[in-house]
Length: 381
Image (cartoon, rainbow, N blue to C red):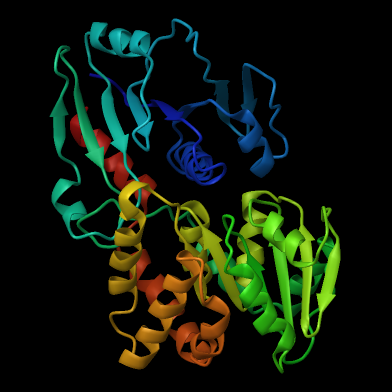
């Protein structure tokens, strides 16, 4: 019988940092917390290098933080498959690799790690097998999710306690801002992190913040929305570290930082705008109010996912609060009207903060995706 000790994770980068962000966190957890040998195949090492500054974007094979990182190229090498094979986010494994899997006496456990969704049908499909049409191989669908009938979401050991300690330590937060060359917090300031796709709703939101009575300090990590920020200030470019001011709004561009420090950014801000899947989950662990910019999909499938999440996330909120939350999230995702709805959204700040903490605690009760995945695969070996 296979030991299940070796794992291959395949990641085809589509969402720049979301796909590889999830895969890297998973690889690290499997290695650190479960002592597994993990080989990560990724087609875009440049995206991985952005969130892991020690990665060489030009190396075919490298070892970094206990993970064997391999550049996934079209001309795929002839390698022995691992005991467990993760096909992340429905990417297509190389045909030669699949043939090698089929040729093994003990077939690998083949997992299709799907995208995160709160839709009702997910629980019914989680864990289902799919027989390969030609080869003696079975692939299992593994769905992350928000209840105990799914695979849960990634939650590293000690993450909650580290978050609590950081959020209760003003000195640690001051050091964090200093390390990013960001000024200390001011009294009554709203500090916001803004990570998102291109969004034409940004101008109206910035106008509202600039003309509001309360100071807003907006921190923008490098990314797609930076072009809209640049355009808002009438510039051709904004470099990392640059700060611009308009009325009561101050905007500063942040460099990409490794994942642990991005977590701290989310923990330290009052409200976090996030995008895709990885930062979306991390914002939930931050236990702070947040706004999700979901990755656009054909036929508005992303809006169905957005509404499904809003339905479960706002279930225990008062109706007016839930309505203002939904309206603002919709406006941000439909790229229209976010500025007009900000004040209605933010008037619920205290409720959002309390709810975010309760939500994170409930989410933790569903278990950790990495552990759930390990247990599932052990049952199939």
